[in-house]
Image: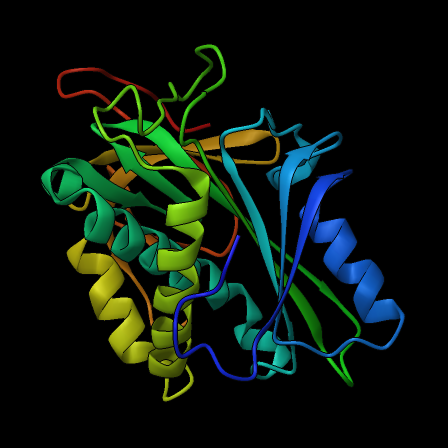
Length: 255
């Protein structure tokens, strides 16, 4: 693995196998590392996604975490999922331009290709003063897990022969640019994300703990929260939840 040219002030630790790149990055932070530091791995033995789910971590895919210290006030840290999703999108388009029209971003932390999950992002933070943030990114380059509630794919299956090494180099450059954009405020990041959003204006099902909501994906607000227009005309603002598209003509009832 290597960083993009011009990535001054950014360090890289390229590992063979780790439990998870997020955990490895946070371990370095606890030992005094402040970053910016990328940690990559050829394979993970205990990769994880949101809500503690296991992340399939076969060699050939990209597993990378960017460690940052005090990138923004704590209340803005969750917006880094938008920053990272845009950087992944940028990197894939740079290396595989024909995929551009098939890519879309899914709130709050996925990159899709033709509706199937291609990449996921996990933001983990520790402390407040300083605030340590691990921005974990996993991209399916050569492998993807078996079908689940949200079908998955990989770059090779999509017709793009992009290696994890090449993708990381492009990603490290794109992430630097997107971080600089975001640090001037969320507005430009929000606009860029919405321009690439999948299902914008479409029907969504959102799981919130033990209940589900159905509504139309209206917007992402100035804090990064999902704005859902309910069937009764009311609006629901959602800070965290699991989102699934509803096929045209299908029906679901919020409960």
